[in-house]
Image (cartoon, rainbow, N blue to C red; front, side, top):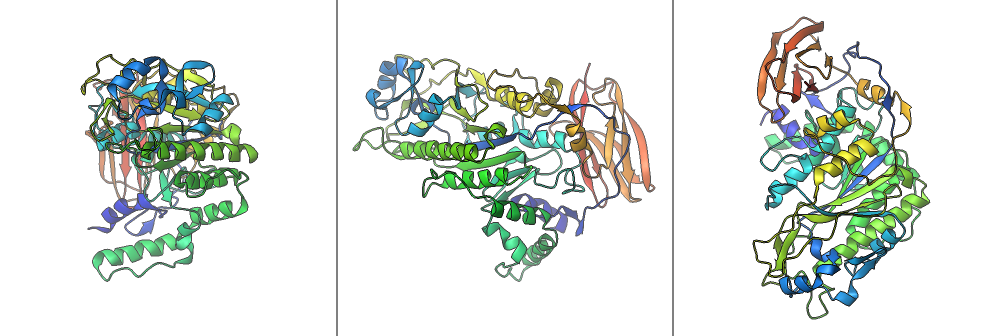
Length: 527
């Protein structure tokens, strides 16, 4: 394996410097000439809570007006009607009996439930459906980049070249776990990195690693570790941030893995990290068998344990960020790759299904329920599934526009399609400033284009260090549209016009590569 390929494989798994041919990518100077426009400032933070495996929505948010048909469809897993937690103001809808804390948050006006969330032509594979949720793609469309990654690429297009810097000294996204998921994959590089916890992660600073194997891969691993120790700006900042903040909530439950992750997130946000997105996760929701414990009652069992874990963790997290006085900046969202079938199976479980409810939580959500209870057929079969009411990408569009303050065109550009937003957040985008322009200019730009958006063509302005330069235009699925530049180019700034008159409207990417740098810019062609 070549060193460059090796780095591309391991870099997203932890904090590593971004390097090619063993040399860190450093400043060659910024390209000038971008226009000064007013944008909207935001220091809002999004916390994504992934429920891996496909959560059973019908036993999470229970349609009580459909209870008779539910009893017929899923007699082995149906919850006792008198144990369901009624939602205040919604007589026909309730929560699983283990979700007392989430029910309290709903009553306090800090939870929004969105019914029957999914996408057209549901895929029932864990891997493929997770990819669709992570990337925001259509069911028949394969994308390499994640929707959060594209957003962060739009906000900080020069990343990772010249980062950290005065404008952005912190990671753009952090995943609590061993690997950065596809949701943070940008157009050119992964826009985030993973940490297990702020203490164990600092092996990077101390250099206390187990010996690498005496193999070629082991030597590469030693090399990566050496460079990682030399370039530890992010590590030092995260360590200092985690050490200066103490969680104020006493409600975090012991032995709750999701609570432990959210505890770290609260510390880092309150400590002052400018990180825009955090991702946490909890597995075990693939409940094909033993979803309930019929001996002790269907309100107990593995699914009950999972939902209590989620409910208690989110409740403690919300309490913590309120006590830390950062709750006005934090929006949370749960999601799972799909729901479960209407009918139960012969193993006191449920099989892969279609749409399911999700929760949005925080001080800025408009409380209540979006959508209506799903309709359960009187004689449901294994082929019956819940109809989608809300496309999950409409929720993404809402977050991008009403939380991260993008305009509609930019939001559509990030999502690669147009989606209507929902009325689910109190106005969070009210302060006009030039902050986003600063974000766009942060770091070192090797290629820019103007105008953008454009109609018939755009000028690509790029920098050469005197080496071989590759400049190509690609579609959203990574197919080369045109190789605009390839070959040795004299040192300095250069321009070339790209004629797009024969292309349909939509999003494209200009990919720049030299011997020492790699960068991608999004191009938006409009009518």
